[in-house]
Length: 470
Image 1 (cartoon, rainbow, N blue to C red):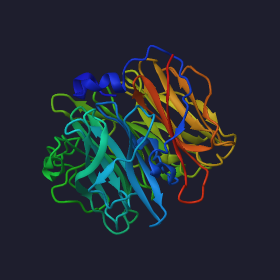
Image 2: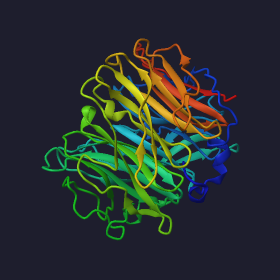
Image 3: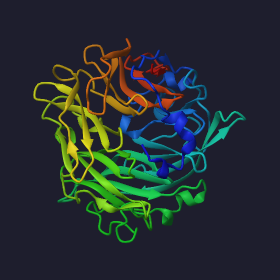
Image 4: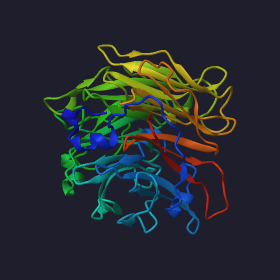
């Protein structure tokens, strides 16, 4: 959530975060996104983890969802955008220009996504293996018809951010707009280093929709170290493009990739949670403090960098249960000064999806956990979940997957985590990766994908629908 003074996107307010004078959310009818053939050939991670924000709503109310699908002929995974120009009723795969090939983008581990009003484009932070490419930023332009419907997507430009060195790995890409500034983040790991092995990096640019968006000298360290020139000594001994400028948001000593979820607060502060130490590690909260006079975060982190630390400890992930709990955290701002954090933990006997709030202040305060759902033991598949805040209804919407049936459900909560709406089923199909998107025409957008493996060319299906507040 970005304050109007920061946003520069006042035309979006009614489409994306418009008021909803209601507190009850109807379960939508989730329909298969089968208008685009690729949405019937989804891969296991067809809809990526919630922290990557794979669902975008543009300034005209058109919905873009980045999916990963499997091409039978080439036995290759592809990443492409699919779009809905009619509020989720139908879906198409727009024509693609400048992608890796005619079938889409390849080799990516994951992407992190943001809609950029300047130039009417999308930005993607791409994480690859070190051998394939390291980390890139890519920009995509839209082709539209007279009704602003998206008919085509063109990869217009790209720039490599981190090259890496042999043995390194990258994950957890993120992209978020803070007013006119685009912030890109990703996790990097070098197990060969001695003290610090893992970091979350961040860089920023003010995109304008031209070649300037991929000019290295226009990228600055968002925390303004060394007058914007960035960190002078990399603890991972990595390799970067010339003139690259970046900040480090978090560091860890364990040989495990770090994962990060973040949001830009109404104050301009960048709030984030970082999972360090792998699936049995710890989740920490920290904030980069906004300097309005300088339009960056040079005021610095609330708590300075240190291995396996943050401003506040959110939770230990636990010693058992689902092994990739660290990948599944989501952070979103609620009412000003309140942050919602959702994710799974092992509580000693079960995988439990827990919801907490962080109250922003001189010393941020982490609330006690509210159990959204307990699997009663180790989750049978994956305790994926998501969280969003819808201001008009004054409710957090928390989604989750039950272990027995793999059906998806949601509950709502007040900003104080008082129970709102009780458990509500989305549908009776076994699914994974439930995503609670932004408001579309005043309705809450849901998307997920099923877990039924079919005979190719069909593989997994994806579903989408809108829930009405009343």
